[in-house]
Length: 328
Image 1: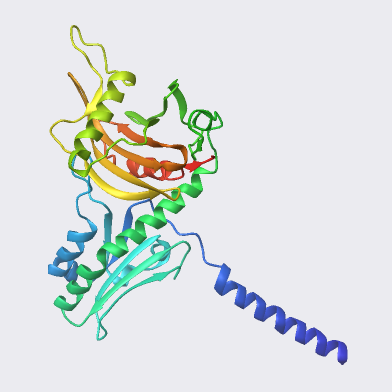
Image 2 (image 1 turned 90 degrees about the vertical axis):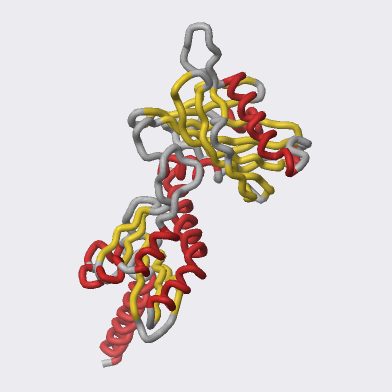
């Protein structure tokens, strides 16, 4: 009888442990490409001014691309079909009429990693006010989750050439599919082929006192990029003409403060083209204030892929470059 009681007690403990573990660890992996959101909304609400407000924020035009692409791709489904594999979507946005007014973010409700943003209100105006107030915070959260997931996948197969550490005392989680195409004392170019084009990462140093005043910042950044293009990134041969990469003259780049590896940095997004030749594409540049090494380190990603969307390619380049770490 004593042995039976012990067995029953152990079984109860085991069952409790399994159930407890299930609630914490049994969630399936989330699914869905980067920059895509499953929007759970009643069809009529989606077609109304509330749906317009959702699109205004979550499908706004992305900065620094060669043609108009939205910052996120929205896939709307009505609540009655939000089931099955859709529950495992990585990024979810729920918008509905409710007696409670709320705007909140929930983590790992049906899968992991997962973010579910919920907007509720009794009237259209209440819901739209919440969207205006919280949309940017939620977009940033979606992007951060996608960035982290992308960076985790980079670790599966890394480039082992070591040229970035050798030249600049940095490491970066560059996939093995990227190969060093060109290098000099102060310039490294890695690239990979993609459908209809290629993706590229370059790195170089600038003096620590570069870009001294805000009033000339844009002009100096353009001059820097154009001089590097003229030196190291030639275009196709054109009789009696000079061709090289430059910053597209018709579009001023956008500049944002950021941080890379704990160091202050500038993020620059814009369009590159080839002087005297019809080629162009988007670029994203990070200018990192590396006081410890008395320099500014520049890492840049750019894509050439005519007649294709480039938002997600640029997002992957961003993810790679943001893994930059300093070894000294």
